[in-house]
Length: 158
Image (cartoon, rainbow, N blue to C red; front, side, top):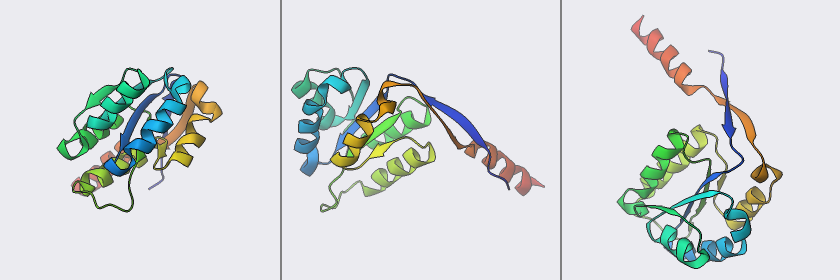
């Protein structure tokens, strides 16, 4: 089966999800404060405490979802699927086990399926938001998984 692609457009104003594990919240908050001027031009959302802290610390509006362990990661994943989130800044703590690890893995998987930029550390977050693509529309091809799934189903039903 040949892979087919569809073009996806990330608009000039990015829809950015901000998430951090407890041990990394302070780092993400400091990063958000340092990059407030860039972030204010974009739509921000975040899970639970992280979203509230960023809103309080920067004064920027942040749409706040549930905390990660209460389904916030899944809420953000669903919005990625719906095209309502373009970018994921998820500063995770690799030294601390998380009780909701399957949710985190599912979120990272869906971000990869929909080919959105993902930063799991501050260096990558800096590279992304200081990229020329942050200030312009970005069109890129992604695999047309829906068409692949339809073709697989048709082959199974034959």
